[in-house]
Picture 1 (tube, helix red, strand yellow):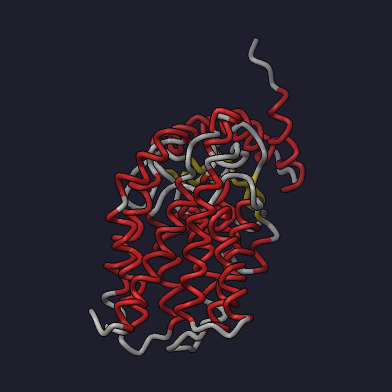
Picture 2 (spheres, each protein chain N blue to C red; picture 1 turned 180 degrees about the vertical axis):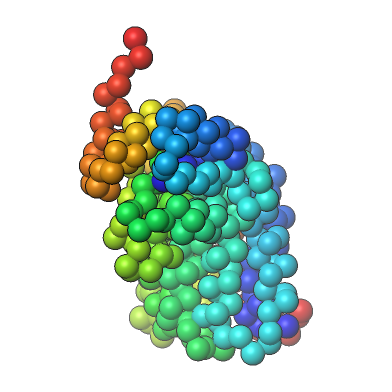
Length: 213
Length: 126
């Protein structure tokens, strides 16, 4: 299995592991399906990418991830994360390795894609509240010549902070927006799933560095 | 016309009611996920748009939330040429579908059909 397929598999497994947790968060302010939908989507993704030919580049693999999420998740997170992976695939086209600069470009286009698709911006209690600060922290790392791993460490910490921040604000997008002010005090499931994915990617890179599996 | 709902049954039901009012309009139901569960699926919607297309434009009726996002994602997958003839209606799904289909059956343009669908917001029941 190529490293990048292993990395995506690790990210998917982290989502599947957190199925109940994400669904529980969504039960409080949404329609209680985020964990179920995301887990269903990533089960399909893991299944699909495990059967891809070894010679497929990262762009191709990410496109496959995107199309699988788009058709199998069912909820709004399908087209949103699907669009993110579809956009991230563009700077990764033809590549079999990702450096920090490419990762930054992928992240940037992914966030732009989510914003366009969801017509959302930061501060609306969505996945953007963890993804965007994480991206900014990552970019700061790139600017100061940190390694890809160090950049991911900064990003993951910022994403977790972003998740905490969502507890302090009211939702104005998605199902939770029906609750308005009553959504304050609750953690956003989408911001949480984004943060889980970044943390899983960081952990995957750590195992690679320490020679683990 | 394409009917997008989280539920297969709802999409098919609206298609049936609408078809009864406008027999000559090509109406395709695109409800549920690829596994038939509650949800929406952009690829299913894309296929439905291709099925629904008879060359005069396609109007998409959507229910809530992810139906809109999935329909917009489906538009991204279309050829440039077809995409400009496909519109998502900003309308209540049942009333919108019926008035739009009736309008379409009179040979109206896509723009007229969309406007009629969107005006369905003003239909009062009581």
